Length: 80
Image (cartoon, rainbow, N blue to C red; front, side):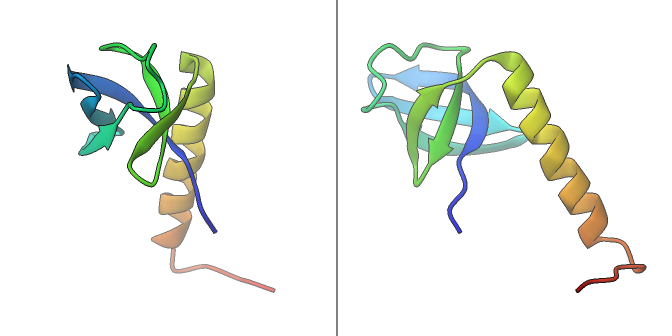
């Protein structure tokens, strides 16, 4: 399964960006989003910004990721 993660552009030099999602930073390219600018929230997939997203949508996704992480650390898991 592939997943796009919302992240904020915290550094931008041409089409080379450093993005931050929940305190994690990595490099990404903004080649596909020429309108992307410093401070924008973008969806990152396979190292590329593929869409600009709003703050509320990003927060919802970050919350879901945090819940998944919390569940993963729980010893009381029951599945299928």
